Length: 180
Length: 180
DNA sequence: CGACATTGTTGACCTCGACAACAATCCGCG
DNA sequence: CGCGGATTGTTGTCGAGGTCAACAATGTCG
Image (cartoon, rainbow over all chains, first blue to last red; front, side, top):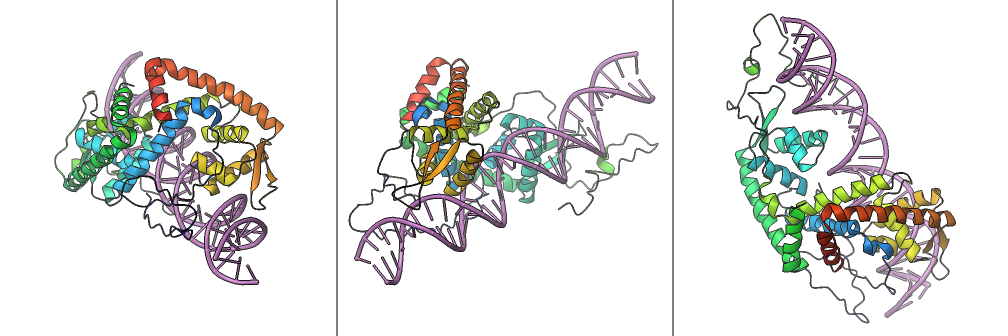
């Protein structure tokens, strides 16, 4: 996890009052990202990257995750952890293998993730009555409470995407992606 | 970490004596009596993830990258390396900072990436004539040749996305993402 | 000239994906 | 019934990347 976001950074580097007006784009009123000084003299050509869906999908995904992480930093829940909690909450008693498979996460990775969530008292693994190998996963009460907070914050995050991407594009993309 | 020769996972108790195949209940102090089980092959509910664009974007990105990596495995070029080569090829003489900034990669990360590409004889860093701090990046002859192969393979990869996503959706998404 | 910013660089730390190996358990079949 | 094979959870390990701090060399500007 990104532990702490203490950004000391030289954000106060605005020792250039005259000359160029800092064109702070109309970003969300969340925090001032230290990305000024983008005074590139010449626009850089993306070349054939312009024809590659993967490039833009990647950039969008990084952008979305950064916003998500920032908004849920108070409760210290990563996107992956959020997805795990959501799936467990919606499918009580499922096994680690099922969970890992539906989220596209390696079983080995899921073990350590659940180990951490267990330590935080959010989830628990009960022995399965039917299969001695399995663990029946479920949320603790604390896990349910925190998931509810996480869902609220995640909904805010999601709502913030609309004006960013444009409402029509947003709905279009969500619908298209859901079918894939 | 590897200090202790870990205990044999869970419940060493099942020593399998002559007794009955007793359920494990006798050995461990089960704090939680209920044993909910899910032996149903029922489809797993994604819950609120269905309303989160980031989830689907992430899944799509992973899927695209896997295909890309597989198709370019012969020439051993990762998506990130491909983007670096493309940008350098289309913007000869640019600096590492500019390159890193346009691709959203940390300067420190870019250093090591270029170091590797240099060792492979694909790129080179020439001293900038105007600024002693900068390196003017460009492709070597071998780099140009390999980039051409990479572009061909990447184009095949891209073409393979059409039937997978549906030509309609593909063009729509590419257009939408490009505007963001 | 001197304070400060930029560029490239290195080191350290952390997350995450991928594999391999393993113990415990379940299943199917002779 | 017993035994080989498959499944599940687990640990170890490796490598790719992201992040941060610090630094030397260099440029810029009051």
